[in-house]
Image 1 (cartoon, helix red, strand yellow):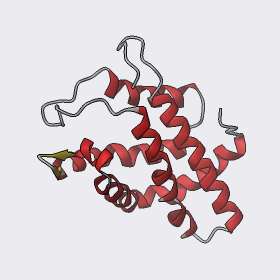
Image 2 (tube, helix red, strand yellow):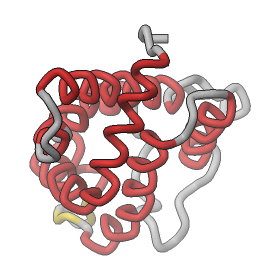
Image 3 (tube, rainbow, N blue to C red):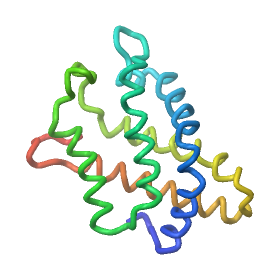
Amino acid sequence: MLLFTREDERYLQMAGEILSDQAEAILDIWYDHMVANDYLAHYFTRDGQPDADYLNTLRPRFGNWIRQLCQRPYNTHWSQYEQAIAQRYQQQSPSATEMADVPVVFLRYLVTFIYPVTNAIRPFLAKDGHRQEEVDKMHQAWFKAVSLSVILWTYPDPAAQEIC
């Protein structure tokens, strides 16, 4: 699976030690990217404007995902956690407080978000005084973990009879 190794897992744990305390600043960068790109902003707007209330309800989930991505052991429990995220959006319709009129997020949009989610992390990893080689390895481990998450989120759900 994307050549994800025990070394990657170790470097991802290191990244988690750095990123956990910076989740809010990371989310600010991600949110700026989302609302600056129409194809992504569509999923986070209401009446043509960014829906701040909705975006704020997602912050704890996204922050938790950053921590879980780095700190969970990469085993069956990790893949079940990621599949639970996918099922939340594939099988459940959003609640009335969420964006009920938003369509399924297609694979092409999730895939295009891998790069900005990965790229935004590098400066945070470099802040902690690690050697460049360690920053590079943490960054590569993050990229692989994000990619694995997207793969699991977009895996076809036979119960829903659609590919997300």
